[in-house]
Image (cartoon, rainbow, N blue to C red; front, top):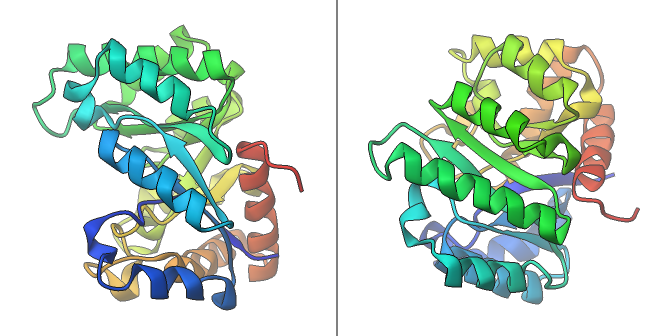
Length: 257
């Protein structure tokens, strides 16, 4: 089975010079599927174009917490319409990001809840972004009964206790290049602790390249480094990591095998 990249941003300008070349070479290099993730109105539109052009691509529609200032009822109606498109498999990325002061926390929380309601309306899983917002994210997810929807905590960055909370609710945890960093001891502990059948692979490309290429543009081809790290942490073969995480991705996004 080939690697499944559950979270990418190939519409990013970092790929403008060679996007076609990279994407056309993914399959030959062991990458089976990619989910391109919307983060604002324009990137959601870009994602819809990519999934029309590349048959191995899927997409998600949603507004990142840092972009929630552009949300209103009209945009929410548009997102609902776009969620019905073929090969749109999730609502996301949505959530909370308190790393920056703007948008205001109350604004982020309001639109997080609204987009969770949208996911419930259209019956799609969610891709959750949570940065420096552990308690509020968990409180909203519990309060809104998001475990009924299912989804993934993208770029999981918290410790074992919070991992246990999400795993107990049936969420998947997105693991990418950060797990290869020497400084990522907390995340390595989480990967060691959690069951393999809850891990999904992701790049967040062009961001978060694994250790050998840290600071450079990321792509799905770098997921082999993440697979190797998980293999070592779990004491299992790379083929098993690829097979199980790829099946996890298909289960997460409710794709037929």
